[in-house]
Length: 198
Image 1 (tube, rainbow, N blue to C red):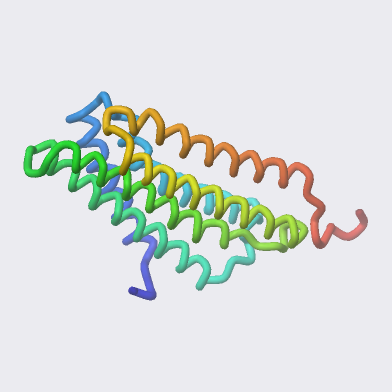
Image 2: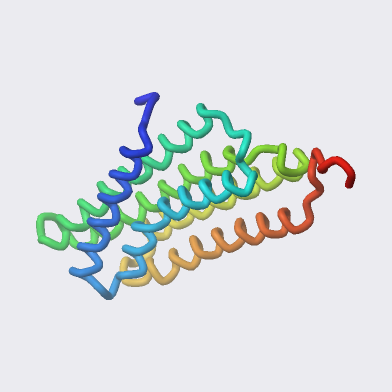
């Protein structure tokens, strides 16, 4: 695997995903929610990491940690771009319709698994009690991994016309659970190194 990936490359791959997703949204507006999920899930994760760094949650993250996360985001974006390419081929009748939709669902599930494995590692114990941060890391990781596996499984076995209705709320619920746990931890945290005089 390539060890050094620039922010420009990551942004370019994410832009490709957005372009392909927008094209698909134009061709199939009735599935706009699916395209939006694929288009914006990883850019949102990247923005969230940037915000965490700004507020000090990931301030002590090393360059190697940042590179690992960037590789994960770039790889996941490539998966989505490839999937959108498959779906575009299906829309243009190069491949079977059902096959294209199932491939996209499975790959999006795989992306969530990747996110679950990498993003929680960006959190550092300096901003809160280490045991609570580790608990959040494990919770976020397992939540996204299980959501991704479930999402992929739904797209593999459920009839295509019902898979989106079942799978999309699973991803939304996972995101809400992790965000809620993060907000609760931020609201109840005790700083490891409180400012002098407090």
